[in-house]
Image: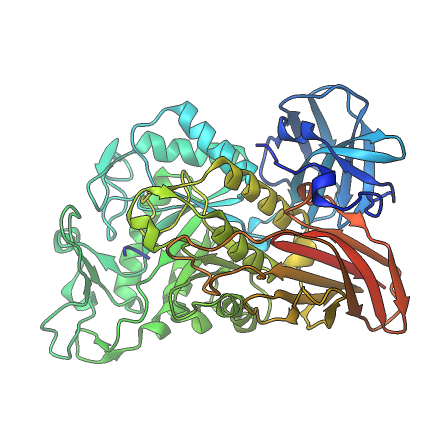
Length: 584
């Protein structure tokens, strides 16, 4: 909506009372070394097709007999010796799978894990969208473009929204399809360059990522009449059409935005033609459709009331018919019109979350509602602006607010639009007042690796369920979702013969509002060696654990005892978010 690498871990002795009770996928004890602080691993793409070759690069190779291990949902599928700093792996032939690749060394009876990275093998990015953005297209160098895309790729971003890349909303391409301008002003007057937009698209495609151009469904600037936009296409604030509905913008914006009727067939044909010009010049993969939320009662040129929420499905259908090979996604501002959008021909759902959904519980409910609207067929991406009030001035993003929100979004199967050339804390995407400290950058790499590696548990079907979980320590409150301040919240799902139990640590929160608008959310104290009891339905064959906050998300088996329908196990640690998987 318009205004609108490295990992850091504490040494094992500081995290745990002892390390002997926690094991890797081969049931060997895990230890953690400081070497993990100084090396990084990257891949040449953000996503791969089945059977494609994955190229890895290790920034720095420590001495020792290193091995690389490839796992899917905690199960090792291959491991091999690692002799250099670059190697390749042929991705398995199965489509739509997430993998975790880790580098380790055997130490006595255990292992030291140095690094990990996720690999997404998916022929269609919209199956598991991880959406990023770009917002500045000045005359920047090829090297800077490459670095920005490489960074997004390392976060495993597989689709990019090109925000405010265009000229006028009603005529997004500056110049003509035959002779596009080399530069043009965006809505606020910033210079955009043809070479930069094209350079970003090419760089994204080189990394296996897709590029979506941003535009409103119904925007026209004050000069639109000279470009052929008719008065009969607009919507008005009264039945006598005395005032066009508009999104007022003061200078330095070049114009306010006047709203047309998305269901008007002539407007649809006009805009589709303008977008064909865009596609003839730029290799965009699709159209990110924006709206402006509930506009109240509005009217068409003839004085008929227009129910905007009902206009979006026919608009989407017209855009798809005009360019059937291009992808579509539409913003549902505060869920406005989402029940109609979800059943239209969009590839995933996108919600810009505002204060109608303030709490962590309401944030998760947006994802659950979207699942219901789409009959569980489409994924959800949330534009959810953390530290929003703080974004009005310069400073740093508050990491606890980001990580708690992401723990909720990711554990409920959603993704979060937040990463671009800078962190996104405001609906005007070029706003870069808040920067990430290095620790948060590293944390988010781990979180996005986790989202990718375990996507088949987090985002690939199953049934959300409640689990009865108790703590053996009376000082640790454990409660079923919804989240409660001062407690560990339990949520999860049943999928493929597994129970997936999520634990999110709200023990030290000072607010249950996800936005952490002033950046005051507290960092939770790490809970260590917590003994918990889970009520289960059947005999458990195997229990394992993974967390984006520990060991780069690498899974470890857990010892447990089962008496009747209760199993007892000990968590290695809980910082923000743990995932326990019980296999039957």
